[in-house]
Each structure stands twice: as structure tokens, then as C-alpha cells.
Length: 241
Image 1: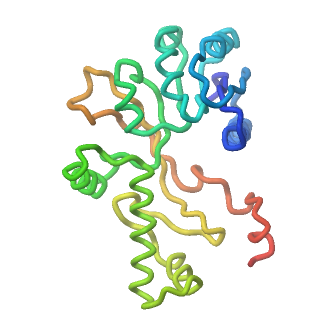
Image 2: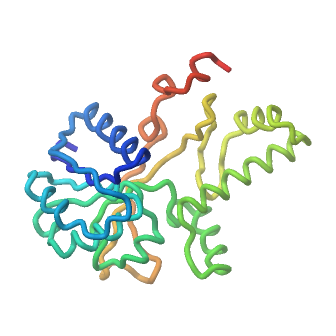
């Protein structure tokens, strides 16, 4: 964590918000930021930005380039960043992206994710069932949507109601336990908190098949994975409404 970071961030509101949150978390953990650069959306050539990252002396390259993360990873491989001791951390990347990029270019990269098929026995069973239909493993977004819809429909069934306030109260009162997460909970600010995972992309030699892409490095507990309730900027949280 104390190795200096460099950010390549897409120049729009979401990219800025992600980098600000990451910088704040790094500061709390005693981390260092060697620098960063904002890049226009739809950028296809990241060469100059990668040269800036190299020159900064950073040991961790945080990729926050929206849809350009895959391109940066490929170009980073061409620049030999891994061989130079730089760890690449895509801040928004999924198994489908790794599959598209390929293990030769993505190997060794660290990726935060909310879901991967070997996260639990339930995750593996559900993922295999979806693969049988789609011939592709589910992404964390697909798994999250499944979980949210399932939890909502269960609350509708349990309350025999579709009244928003009634259903929402039931959803908050009911732990979320399914293929997506074994111990999720919905806070008063409506955020569903759960474990997150830090995974590392496997090398081609480690992989046993087309979708055997990552291995678990660490599990991050909800209290560490999400912004504390007390720090929420939402005015409704402040007023208790």
C-alpha cells in the first residue's frame, strides 16, 4: 500500500469521483500518490500517458479510463510495465473484459470485484447454470442485477404487496444471501454492503480453461469495502428521511 500510485483517469464526472475516493482511501492508509493524468473519453492511444506514469516513479498504475482500460492494459504490456516492477490495477474491470483482452496481456494484474464464479459454491453453481444458457460466464454486474431483482421479488412475495415503502422496509430487514453474496445487508441509506474481492489475473500456464481467469488474493469485509454510513454526503441521510 505504501508504494507510490499513478492514476490514468477518464476526464468526466464518474472518473473524477472514482479517483477522488481512491486518493482519499490511500491517504487514510498512509499511501502515496506519485501523480496522475486526465484523459479524454474515447482515447485510443495512451502512449504519452504511460510514459508519464513511467517517469513518475510510481509502482502501482491505477487504470480509471472507463472503456479504455483494456486498451491501456494492452499498451502497458507493450511498454513492459510489469517487467519494470509496476503493478497494474484496473479500477473497473470484469471477467468478460479479461476474457476479451486475453491472459497474455492481463496476467498478473490485480482487479477489485464484487463477484467471481469461484467466490463460493453458490456462485459457481449459478455461474455454471448461466454459462449453459449463454456460453459465457456472468460478469459482476449481471450477478449484481440478479441479486437485486431476486431480493426485491422475494420481498414482494413475503409482504404480498408492491407498495414501495412496504417492500423497501422488508428488503432492509432481510439479509441478502444468494449466489452474489452470502452476507449482504441494505443500510438505511439504501446501500447494499457486502464482501468485495481482490483477485489476480492468472498466467496462461495457471489457467485450466477459457474462463479460468483469476485467483483470489484477499477478501475485503463490508466495513472496509464501502464508505462508512457516517461519511455519506446524502442530505436525506442527514435529515433521517
